[in-house]
Image (cartoon, rainbow, N blue to C red; front, side):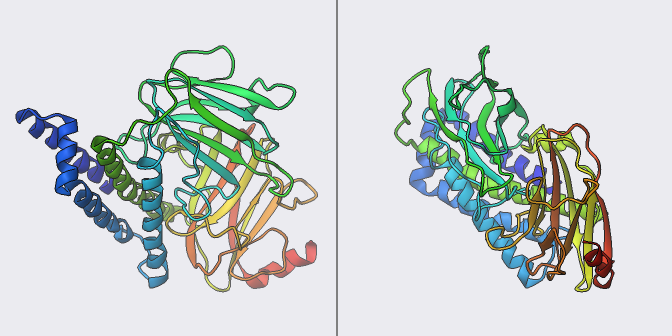
Length: 397
């Protein structure tokens, strides 16, 4: 409830400003100029960032210094993402692909196998993406209504995957992004579309290459307008609301996941889609907690699918540091059992087993399993065992 109330209160403040402006015969542009010159826009940005700290005190959050430190770093990272996404390169008249979520900006169980690209777009315009397919395991383009810097969720408005593209023999392709239908390689938008996201999922990073992509507006000049006070005010408002809204949303999710800690039930697909998830992915989100002498064992028989993965996150739903630690496995990097099944082992220290994942000094956190474009969606089985019980698994491998 806290996130909706926060978003509603911020939206109510915006509506109140608009009503006040109407009474005084002001325009959004003149009001933005006043807020910039008076310093009110910057003060409101800072006040909303300060209020975002409430997410670290949400019911269920860990209150020890280690997890709280990671939480404040998380808020700082979200601030960086918000400024990059809504102040820099935010003009839909001149979209640019940029990495907002990456190795040091994380949110919402970001996939360590993914190379995410975002671009600001508008359903009022038309765009063309030009690219070369590369060899990355999974490539998908999606448009979404809204963004984390506004209320109302982020429902999808269009989706197209590499498997559905008409690609030239040399690997090149063109995707048309518009509300108006195209017969070939069309990524739909609606009048409310505000974001285009590209997901590229690696199987084996050492052997696969990313798609090379550019985007440009085609229904007018592909150039940004000079910065206006109205654009900056909107960018600062959206950036700060991202920090407050996203952190509270995922704090609530993490709290709820504790009702099935150390299990992996399927996450509600409609909720996922509204939060910006890929409709082609079945997600299994949960919370994990392990004592020093315990291990989490995850077992499944993967269905036929484009790709799957499992990852460990901290409590704030940030993937653990995959640059230096083994915290995730996927369909290309996991060692399979002779019968085609998989067994993943999570412990605090290396138990000498295949498919071991490190908790990187955490005693709890969140986790996520994904099946991507799968024929069916089996629920991964989980069990917590004592470390002494892993001896039988070592002997069998």
